[in-house]
Amino acid sequence: MVPALLKQRLDVPRPDALLPEGDALAVGARVVPGCLRFSCVRSCEMCVSGFKKIEMMLSSLLRPSSCRALTGACSGAAALACTRAGVLGRRHYLAPSLLAGLGAYGENFGHVRVPQKFVVPDADGWPEEARGLKLGMQVNVLRQQKKRDTLPQDDVAQLEALGFVWNLFDWKWQCVLQSLQAYQEAHGDLEVPQPFVVPSEAPWPEDAWGLKLGSRVDNIRRRGDFVRENPERRAELDGLGFAW
Image 1 (cartoon, one colour):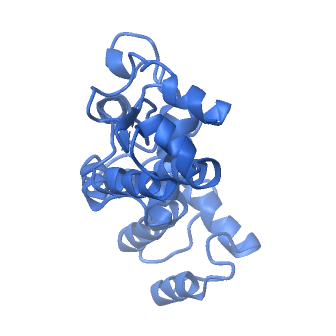
Image 2: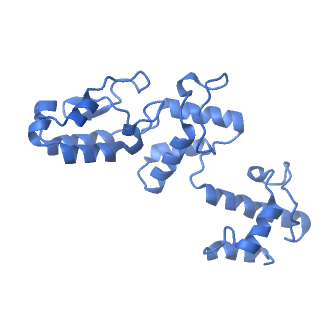
Image 3: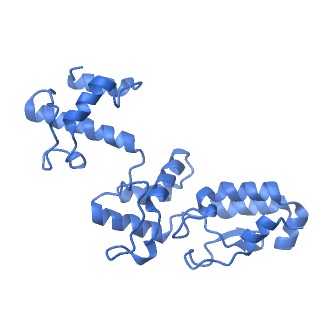
């Protein structure tokens, strides 16, 4: 007997939001009509866990007899091998809706550091195929995939071309460090007054425009922000002549 949960997943009609036919995941002689890693506009359980979820589902639920019932001619192990080959053989996984949403976000806000709760509005100025997309959540998943080294290099390069930031904490630190360097060049010291805000003009680093640098410096001194348990960053500040 085919496990009811798995058969239900395999028999679900393909939603209109999914990528074109042929971009689904092949399992033996059948096609799993579920989205895999951002293939659809809205989140679903298939794209959240992607290949790992399908691999675990097949290895734990499929026996040779049930796999034959589904595909007609393969064992459970063969189906798992087909799954792995089908996934790893794809060149990339980024859906057009995701790329369109990121591109529109960049045009509207000047960067693609998308807040985690951001959802693409159903409004003019946003691509129709991306409206309703939980863009912030998917950006967070992309970062986790990059951290686990499971994101293909083609996707990494495509996202970096859009200005994608993989580690927000490191990015914030670089903003502070570059702002301190600019402050030192402009004022000859690093005695940043507490109310100081980075001006929104050259030669100040553009990513740091509007940064409350005085408050950041105060928090570094009092709480060890950015440098606590990070001797390399502390050494970078020492090299600038930072006064603790």
